[in-house]
Length: 105
Image (cartoon, rainbow, N blue to C red; front, top):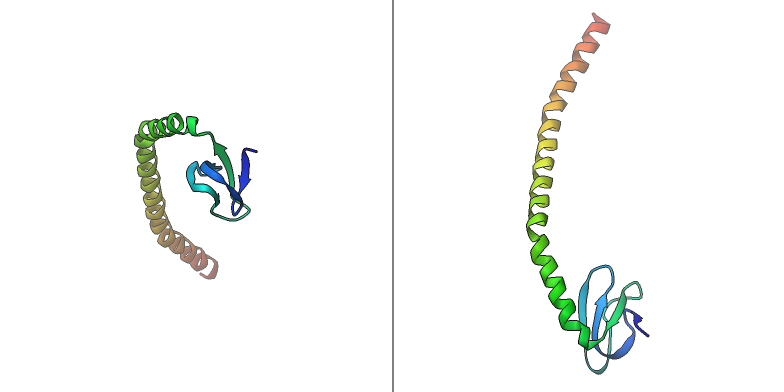
């Protein structure tokens, strides 16, 4: 059986946590997988561990610059939205004030 849940007693080896791409090791002949029932694990054959770790490392190195740029653009967009809101609130208040003056006066 390749699929396991968190908290389950399993044989020792390498397990890939689904959804988070985290490799968890269970040391010894038997052990318990971390997490609750909502955590799902896939048992990795030991022969696949090294190539899989190398591929995951290469993907991390290749996409790290893109992740950095995405975070930078997200931060710039948040600052721009915050600045526009700071400008829009006084402007909207002034427009509402003028509208009320027109109706009263």
